[in-house]
Image: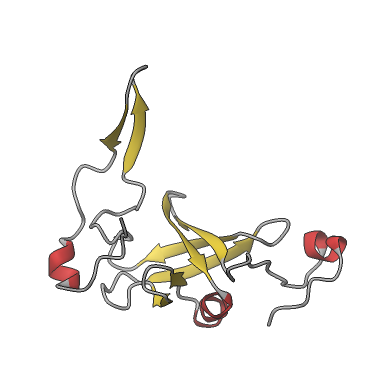
Length: 151
């Protein structure tokens, strides 16, 4: 499915898919809502996750905290159905445009993982919530599953 990277011209302007994974085997992926354009999340994919995403038309990522492939929505039901997969000019970043089943993308319970804005008052930086309420209760959905956030 993936071609070997041979020339800059082919990578930048050709039709061969030759993603550039970093030294750890990952490529960053940003995910937006197809209808609104709202940024839902950022994650990483490895070779297998990108292949699965392309083949199944559902978002798959690589969870660095759990060290495994993560089919978005497999546990929660909030599956991200792929509408478009784009790759940037040098093929080292993926952009997924998705339709979310269940209207949530964040494991914390919000629609988007970007639910806070950084505000600076000249002295202190603080986080201000941009989403006022959660779409779901994470304890109801995930139960006692380990939280993927690592301190």
